[in-house]
Image 1 (cartoon, rainbow, N blue to C red):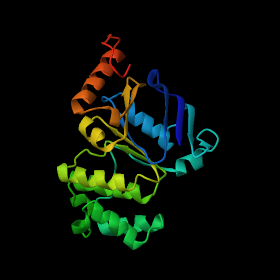
Image 2: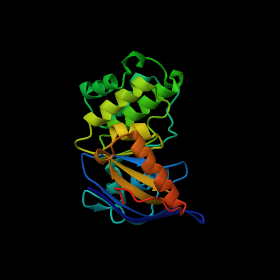
Image 3: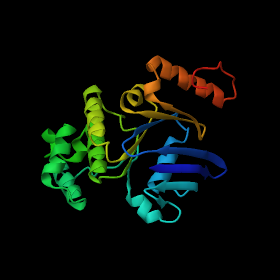
Image 4: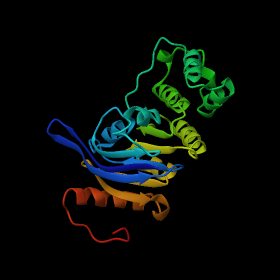
Length: 241
């Protein structure tokens, strides 16, 4: 289980995260939904160990404060703005990364096929479109075989078929890990995730089981209501309150 309690992070005098608390169990795919600037990327950076916030983060009975290196070793983080080596041949680079993380050829070839990259293995990564570069970055992140998988806007630049392939890959590998996905795209989180955490102005505004949300219209209504509440505007009571 991942436990986060009273998590705070400030950029200079601006509070980016203000007392975040939640838990996620192994096998869950959880969506982190919020507007730009809500604190989604900051939260993922804290969980990955890039930032050291105030508060408590525990994973597999390890505290980030007591064992920062071990804690960080359990996670893999794909930032929204990633960097690939443009002059490297994609297949050679994937093979080298697979060797670092002790993958057999059959295991990483399966990932290559799942993400639809097999036709481009002999191309330099600088020739790839945004969508294919995104899938290479996702594949490299998955090769780390993390217990905690952190993805920041992974659907950016992907077309419909690519999104469907990614969704299938993430679901297939979800059983033995915790997956937390940041996005502002409601339909993708609704289709993929079992829970959705709504972040507003650096605070956790809601934690909803997708099974209790009847359709996308209801999710949009929930999100709009939480936005109004974050701005201090009263809203009518619902079954969620």
